[in-house]
Image 1 (cartoon, helix red, strand yellow):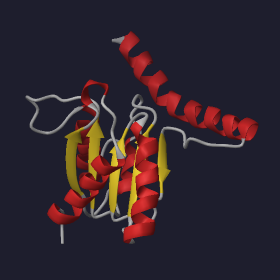
Image 2 (cartoon, helix red, strand yellow; image 1 turned 180 degrees about the horizontal axis):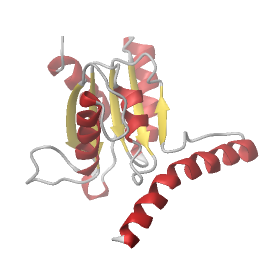
Image 3 (tube, helix red, strand yellow; image 1 turned 180 degrees about the vertical axis):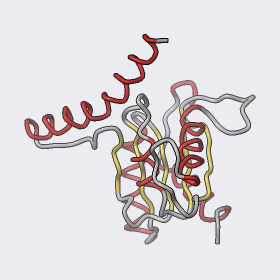
Image 4 (cartoon, one colour; image 1 turned 120 degrees about the vertical axis):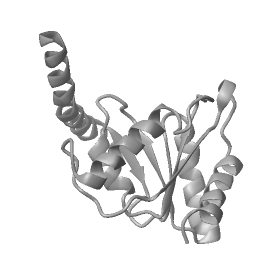
Length: 174
């Protein structure tokens, strides 16, 4: 029990250390990856794709295309650190959008609530509804979609991501 307590305490301290190291990296190299999450054009976005890994660069280019060519208010959120889970940062980035889709490079066909990242985000929003576990209380939860992309090391292409945004617009809240 004592070891688990120390492990949990160290993981919670890691959040501040990650931010500290990110700040040092930015100072040294002149660029930032946001710490535990990297928000891309999320401030005014109505629809956001959430994911992890290399296809998020494609998502950023797709966001630029959709904003420029279609005038859509879209963004993407790259979760760059899964543990300790950045619950409050994710809630802050997503709470004002209409809908978001969590895309993951894995599929858990027996899960009805989504894959690992989706489940963590949903749990964070559940905590945010009631304001518990150190997460600020919020008034509403955006519509949450989830899916798998890039299975078997397949490329996730801009057309795939455009289809995800179109799905949110067509099937999300009015």
